[in-house]
Length: 370
Image 1 (tube, rainbow, N blue to C red):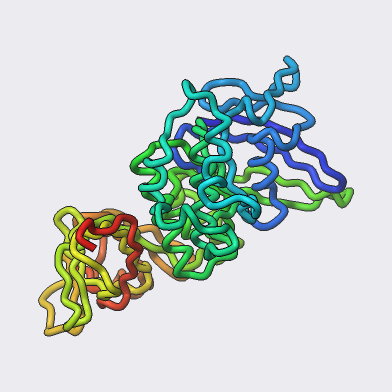
Image 2 (image 1 turned 45 degrees about the vertical axis):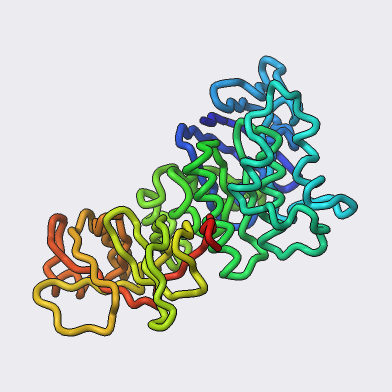
């Protein structure tokens, strides 16, 4: 999807980035100043590298040696920045259609109605942008970028500035876009758990100070989120890793405080949270809120008991991350002592125990009966 080898010098900062990724969703991870946004800006044509080349979807958009430097509009990349950059004098609808109206009809690949449905924007179309919540404004910014019919979507910290509930909701919409539209994404984030949920490959950027006092950013590692996790852990806290499970509401039991979500063969009891039968949802659960058990079970307060098989164990400093197949791959965080006590190894039969309140839901498609 992307191939770049660029050199950028800006004052006392230099970036030397070499990166190739053919995955649908590629993440850029690193501390502030490591070069994440610089790479995104170079891809979009906002800044011009001093040297190197950039190819997107097989086409050269920048090459210093041959003099190729396509203008941003020629690259046809949709960009969503942290501050949304919505036009305050336009309605939500006119913001969404701003780029769409400027795209030749024969180049339009997505219809407004399709994007309004995917991002649940129809109720917001007549609102002023100053009436939108943070999460709504972010969805509008994403929708506007998509309606430019981009070949690729560039997302710069799209969850920043949102509270936790809104972060989960916007992330759920991004997952929906990934699965239903298939548009390639480059996703910049300082949150490694978000990258684990959304991206297929991650480039880890690091910044160092040279003997001459120059700050130098570079791509230190590239791999799947789990392949580079041990490298990330050397310098950063991984944060609360999560599993995200798509499903639909099969049953509601408000009198008992829960609803039942069906995800393929897996049934999940989640907090009711005003859900309706038929709602399409994403359910998230943190890796450190799951208990594994072997052998016979006593009577339990946990309402979710899922039989499964250990697929993989990844040992890291102070913790072990297990991947357990319960019908979907589930991430579980364990201590080394627990792994030894349970005799866990790939192929071991286990049960995953999860309290109802440990599951969180984000609605991405509402029931027609609502």
